[in-house]
Length: 50
Image 1 (spheres, rainbow, N blue to C red):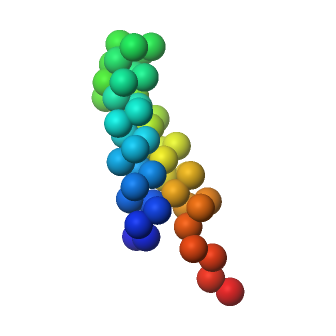
Image 2 (image 1 turned 90 degrees about the horizontal axis):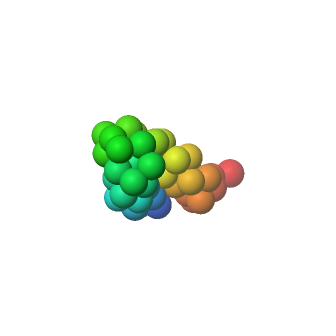
Image 3 (image 1 turned 30 degrees about the vertical axis):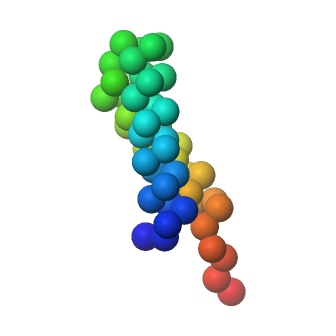
């Protein structure tokens, strides 16, 4: 895995923890959503190979 993907997943998990606790009252659900979104963002900004 590339560094952008790792960093995006970790930031997404942290943000998801807070958002999940505030909105859904479930930190686990927030972490899952945050890691999923972070993985998508990390894959999108990852290095391109031709």
